[in-house]
Image 1 (cartoon, rainbow, N blue to C red):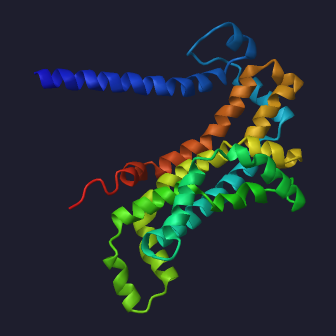
Image 2: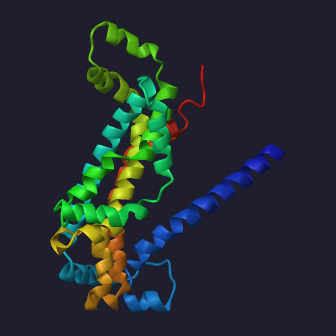
Image 3: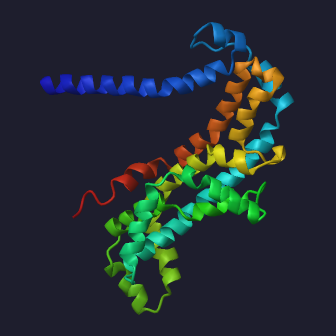
Length: 275
């Protein structure tokens, strides 16, 4: 009886916690259907009737489709590069013994602790000298070097892959790239998917670097475009239109999470149980 009571209380607390976590999303959806005056003067969880007018204001002032496409292009390319090259690097650190292995891996751990904002001024100066300002290259190519992803995948592949599994294909004459693509990547798929979610969300929500590097409005990503709403006269007085744009920007993140969420638990808990 006592166990059932504790279990019931635990479920109630989990439901309450889930409700608290979902409340901001619910407010975002509801406020996207209300006018700016309604949002500023009252609080409500009931949908309004201003969704069409809010959407018209957004489409009349901003090219949402272009911003959506720009962000999607940058986020997908960045995520693919992060996932592939981080997995390749992690595989090298885990199963190849070479001089400086531990030193380089320690350096990666140190770089994880350094805020990226500290190198922003030098990075901007470098991109200026290379003529890459107002280009997507500085937003995509640096994602190849992702210390946190390399660290996680290195620990993951060590926990799920015994070294003996690589001996048979090597004896048969398989190349290391063949082993990596046919054996290692399938086994690392849960870990790669887990980190890809974070990489996609980070790239999709990236605001500061696109703001600094992109000068042409037609190349703006969606976060920069959303921030520009404050400078548009018609939208500055209509908070509802801003909520519509923010709600649209959340859609790809939710889709990415739905496709990859089944890998999260298996990716994080890998290696916690050994037979």
